[in-house]
Image 1 (spheres, rainbow, N blue to C red):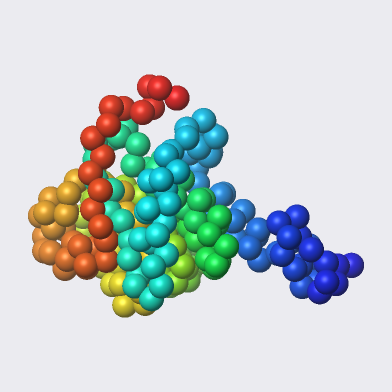
Image 2: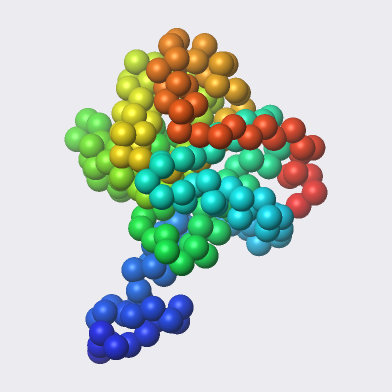
Length: 211
């Protein structure tokens, strides 16, 4: 039985657990990525200077800053966002819960909880709060979903709560913020994102053919 003096493989105190909270959080983040993204991350090397510069933005204390990656399909934005998520665990002072979430998958998870069916992640409210309260969230494929009042309200709730709680968020999208506002029918969400995030344009050639 581990004691409070026992150490995890990463060198942190186990505090009576088989695995420290840091390693458990990193494992949860890793498995929030799809198998395809995990495989690709093992093959692609992103420049350390870019990673460090963007992590400095995300981890600026009490700012709730984030990044908005905009570019065509295959431009590398999703993979780079995933790389930032995992690299954030190398910043020793940053812990907490971190997740990668594709917005269409989130909406499907919430729909699954309706009509008395149990969701793997809990109730609708529990799912939403999970992503509202995460210390770092990657929200992938923003703007690809069909816009309804229901999907708009869920997205607005997550973005607004993360904005108010000063939580760092990385968004990826095929469209820019003006196009996002037009798609959603108003600029409330895009305005929040603009206040939260620095915008990065991705215009590289399709990376998937080089993997």
